[in-house]
Length: 457
Image 1 (cartoon, rainbow, N blue to C red):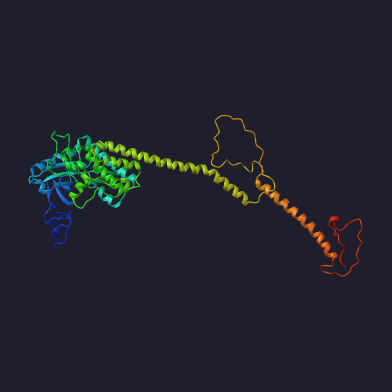
Image 2 (image 1 turned 60 degrees about the vertical axis):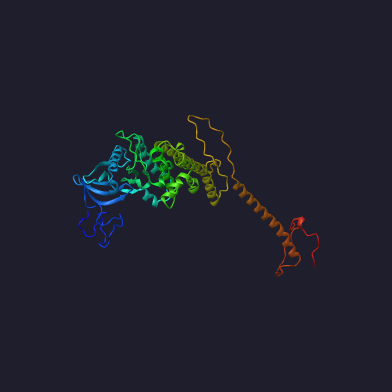
């Protein structure tokens, strides 16, 4: 912790700034204004963690236990009103009654002697869903559904206690990770929650005050915040899921008044139009959660979560079926690929002159079919089929026969041609040698091959 007497120490955020800086660039307060470096009840405030509409959250140390906590302090301008201070504490009690692990744990609350209302909570390590969505935009639908299921589980625990959050937004959802990298959420800020069946029997409502964040506010919450029910939280959760899947908000505007008018008079752009890659079952769930008429929405967060899981299961089942079909086709094509490889290997080697027997040339199953599995127990042996001579053997034998026939025909054609050339005096002349008379009964060529004309002189 920085010593408050350090030059440039900022009581607004707990950091140090140049001495010539009059205002804190983070909190907007004067360097000397703020709780950092002071003690609130039993908590020594160290630094600013974040802020909201009702107050700011600081890192603090319990002076007795020496344990860090997240200390929420009500804004001074609100803490000056006794009714708001009392309401802050009573609503803190309602949040503390939630023991679900997905809701931030409240450990202490109270009002100091100088009128400062405080709320001590467990300190978390991670980031808000708002920061996560700023990096991953849009999210994969499996990741978005997993995070929203956690959020709806926390909301469901609150709804079962009769508590409506009324300010559900990405900044109030904290994403934490365990040592193995698994993600879970912590739902924050029940500061403006409404208790239907209050813990102490008194409903906690706020009259004449617009509560919530307009970008995530249900249309009926704009018109009459006193009569909203669990379905207002369902609408806000639908807007967050819409934003995670599409990377944009369904309703935008330059000013709060413009956003509020659009919420009451216009329907947001359909999710299927702005994010066509989202599976149809998820689109239908988001459309139901964001219906302008509360009667058409899910009754509460639990019903919303069930519909979300059903949509994910249907999409996962379709994906599994597609994968199974691809694997089945690949398995059916495996025998044909093996047969083609064996045939290519057989053509590449020197073929034997005799037809191979059944042991050297196994028959391959037909393309696209796996070999049948035998039934248990003895079965009669099927009659053995005669071995089939491969076609390449017939082709080789035919080629050899054709070659032999061509050789014979060539010999028959060359013989009379050579005889004719000798009788006609053509060709190279040799020295005269005594000639042995040939018997008349042995012709020099077949009779049919003798020329019919007399030789030229």
